[in-house]
Length: 181
Image (cartoon, rainbow, N blue to C red):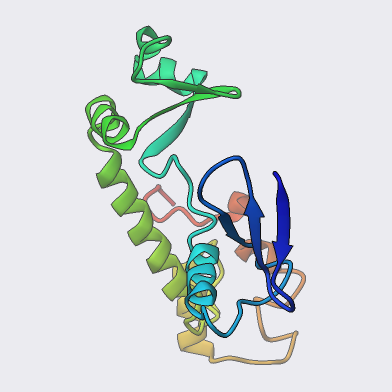
């Protein structure tokens, strides 16, 4: 570098070097673009938007264990796998093809689990009706409710009465309708 010139109140820098051409550079962190070259601001904005794009967009990271599960450990050291840290990058199209061969029902399993998840989400939004019938001796409890009605008094209600409540809670007291009397 033979000489350096900075345009006032801007980020444009001219550098005289050992070449015939003078190097012109724009550094946005130093200052704004001058009025006579407004296209530099639009170029800077475009570069900032595309700044974080990855080089490995079309690649899938695969660990050594996953390679063994897919049966591709023989590809280690070839051009198909690119080593990176504790695993490898491989082409996403190849990965999907191999994955579909190894586990052909993966898509069906995914659809089934997604459907079950959506049904479960819909069920949580529903209003739950509390069942008044107990789990044990439902038929007898239903018969009592139809014949006697719903008495709120503890002396008359067999579901609440401590003497009879275990009949509707404990499986040992389940009524066997099929057996001999």
